[in-house]
Figure 1 (tube, rainbow, N blue to C red):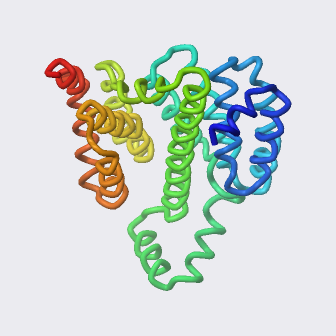
Figure 2 (tube, rainbow, N blue to C red):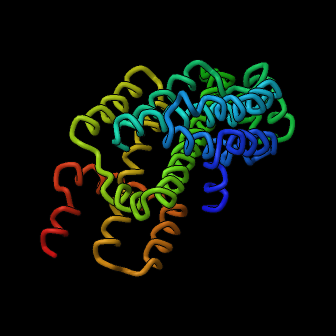
Length: 283
């Protein structure tokens, strides 16, 4: 992958070609987004605009076909790369990406063509149990179509945000490998939300509950989760522990909800305690 990044950075034509081809291939939009982010991180939004357009054109075609994820991911990761390049703070970058995703979900960008109704009808036909559950909810005054739309939009928004974060991290690692070896590792290990950023996330989460926007509450914790993952990486790095600890950590993170809650709690406490600074001081 590093060889690809090196070739991409030889010039705008190479970067635009890779971004264009990757965006055309189903499920390779992440590579297109990562290339656009790499060029933006290194050269800025203006010089990277041709690469962004090359990635956005086929991604826009997928949107017309009913899949908004590629285009939303490409645009979101480029925005986040622009912010990270200007501000040099992952916390602000993650929060900005989260807020944009909340807006996209609320505007129904991720709903399928025709809304959730046709998809809901298809699910009803294929599953008698789901049909019975939705009928019961309707009898209780709950709009099944609105509920389905909220679920589809929220889950898709979550996927887009996580994909954007992953693509940005990949682009940043490429940039560090080419121009500042070891820089991304140090930067990610030091990622920690400050008090204002944490309070903003808590505020968004509470606001989501008060105004019946549950997906806003869910998306609000993604920056905190990333900070928690960075905390674990930094702690293992400072301790000089084996990489197998990270394998075990990700296995638990992906398979058990309690691990996610523990990581969120540790990240919140780290805002005030700064565990890595304490550990480094002891060393």
